[in-house]
Amino acid sequence: MQDVLELFMNIGIRDIADMAIVAFVFYKLYMLIRETRAEQLIKGIILLLLATQVSGWLQLHVINWILRNTMTVGVIAILIVFQPELRRALEYIGRTKFLTKSIIDIEEEEIKNAVSELTEAVGSLSRQKIGALIVIERETGLSEVVETGTEIRGKISSGLLINIFIPNTPLHDGAVVMRKNQILAAGCLLPLTDNPNISKALGTRHRAGIGITERSDSMVVIVSEETGSISIAENGKLRRFLDVEKLSEILLKSYEAEENRKLQFLKMKWRQKDE
Image (cartoon, rainbow, N blue to C red):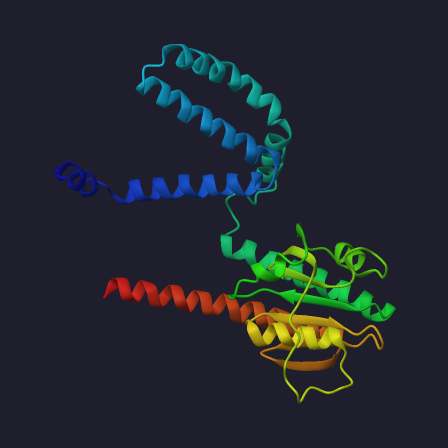
């Protein structure tokens, strides 16, 4: 215990800065390989390293010798296998964004891109009078809703959203569930609202959009198949006859409010620690 205390006492500002820079660089590297083939390969390499260490502790000499030689040859194999990812990383560094953009800037850029792609898709669907039901997840998880549909886990794009809702395709009859800039699933089933005061002119699509917002803090974008009108459901209420510009404004404000709530929560936690 005394050794641990002495270690912490000897940590200076330079050591903290050193560790912070290394952690940030590893985070950036992880973001580069996330959801790529390299991520799975790195997990395999980590398992091999752990197996090598454990075999040494247990004095399993043959297994340890095989693993050590495998790792030696593996260094060359990594350079060959990771060639696309290494090239991607070098290109990313060459664009001078590797260490200059903050995490907040990246999130803001992703949110703006997501809203842009979403509004472009909704605008196109509205003009063609193609019905759509898009659920945007917030704090309340929607895993049970995602499980009723077909998992996609794809980055949001206007083309993907339009293709999902094209009539007579497998996934068009249901809801899309989004989380920030990712489409989690399509063809999902939503609970209908029990509100008896809802206008009888509204169909199943609008009632389902209102229903999920009564059970969660999600926001739902709805495109009418009959009229092509755009609506937003939130907190059990429906705003109808929106244009694309107004839709974009509402979505951006919603994301901004969510980020502000998270920042306020973090500040409160830091204050409690200081006290």
